[in-house]
Structures are given as C-alpha cells and as structure tokens.
Image (cartoon, rainbow over all chains, first blue to last red; front, side, top):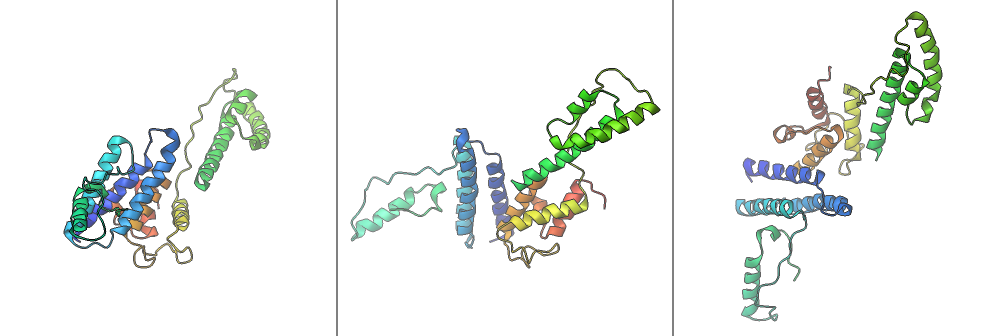
Length: 120
Length: 162
C-alpha cells in the first residue's frame, strides 16, 4: 500500500462523509435513514477491506467506491443495485458445472458489488 | 441534541445582551423592548433593570423621543476563545465511542496513544467540521493528530488571539 493509494482512500472516505452530510433523498422521510445508511455502509466496507495489501485489489476497491458514489449521486439512491444471476441457472453440488457457474457469476459481478459477499 | 441545546443557549445569551444594550441606547417605548425580548420569558427581570437605566439615560441626553426607534437585532454565535474551542473539541472527542474518555488528554496522539487508525481520524475530523461549521481541506486534515493540534488549527482559521 503506497502513500498515494492511502491518500486516495482517505480522501474517498472523506468524500463519502461529505456526501452523507448533504444528502437529500427523493422522499423526505427517507433522508435521515439514507444518510445513516451511507455512513454505516462506508464504515463497514472500508473496514472490511482495510487489510488488503496488493495494489490490484486496492485499485479494485477504489474503483468500486468511485462507482458507487457516481451511481448513487446520479440516481439519488445510495443502495447498490442487485443483479440477476447469469443465464446458466443454479448447478447441482457436484461436477464441473459448479466451477463454471462460479466463474461465470464472479465475472458477471459488476464493479460496484465487489465487496459484497454473494448470498447464493 | 446537546449541541443544539448549547447553541440555543449561546444564542439566548446574545439576544439577552443585545436586548439589554438596545434598551439602553434607544429611548423607545416598551414595545421596542418587548420586540427585543421576544419569546424568552426569563427576560422579564431585565426589563426592570433596563427601565431604571432608561430613566437615567433619558435624564442625561435626549435622543429621539419618537415612537419605536427600532434597533436591528443581529444574532451570531458568541466569539470563540481558546478555552471554549478546547472544551468543545474535548466534548466531541468524549462523545466518540471509540475513544476511552479516561485516557483522553489534550496532548494525546490519536494513533499512538489512543490506538485509532486513519479512518477513525477522518471520522473525528468530520465531527469537528460539523461542530465548528467550516470545512477542513483534505491535505491539512491528515496532519491533525492530537486534540491540541486541532485546537490550534481552528484558532488559526478563526483568528482567535492567543
């Protein structure tokens, strides 16, 4: 983790907090809840990825953060957009199909959902 | 919140001071003084003081005796002093849940003494921005590593004489 990435990460963190401070939701009764959600989400995800050391994954996380900020600001919706499973469907527990499935799912995962665990 | 209560109390102090001074300087009628002391009912004792001062003032000089010399009431927060800045900074830090209030001192370093990391330090700086109402840019926010430094920085920014 270099000094440049560290500065970048910290300024992104600050940026998210500033966004949360001035956040106005589309429905006024949701504003406070969404602000707290933004703060909480930033805290959990940043702490979860705090220990990463290789530049590749750090860059991926930075991209994820920027993507979520941009998408959230554009659609006025801080929650990440869930995606559908790819067309292959769910496999049985055994066999090569499972591995292929997992690979495909991993590939289909968009950049802004990288830090979230897969539920399936 | 407690912070809003503090601010409201400070504003009430200012309004009271302004009401007192305006009542002294304007020889207006009771309507002016009533306008100067709008909602707070505990300002009533001041009106007695002000009326005695008013009569004294009128004997000395005759300013305009016409109806309702309305004086503008500007409200602002009271001027910052080093002690108030320090108190507020320590108060905000005590409210932060990752800091142990017993271990907190003015010169305690966030990372070395209190065991916080840089993300926590960013959160603390955000809380200070919220408290004092002005933005702290990113490059300088990184260097503030103890309450003493924060107090100095805010005093610099707000021109508080030491």
